[in-house]
Amino acid sequence: MNKIFLILNNQELVPKFYAKYHDVISKFGRTGAWNALPLETQQAHLARMSEDFVINPGKDVYEMMSDKEKQYLTYLFGLAVVATRI
Image 1 (cartoon, helix red, strand yellow):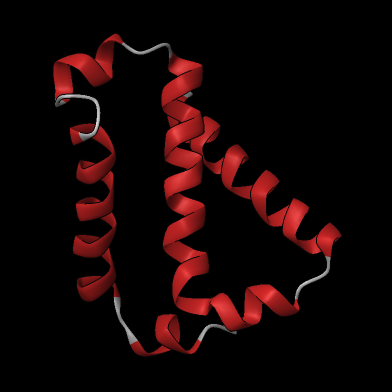
Image 2 (cartoon, one colour):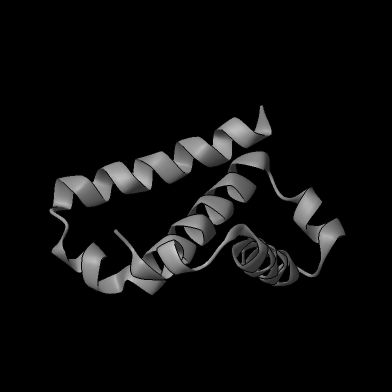
């Protein structure tokens, strides 16, 4: 289990998540350019952002995971992003 996420509460994590979200959007020139991207492209970027948000603080745990577990984690984040768009 990722110790950082056990220590931080939602009041600390939500602003960090939204900051990452705004970083992704700003890479494309803000909201207008982001909204012009195909939905699949947006979903791919958001899935990667979410994955990085969870994996980077727990890099040591992620490195211990098997390749199959890493694939499941990537798949899970992809599903989560798609589900938020439905």
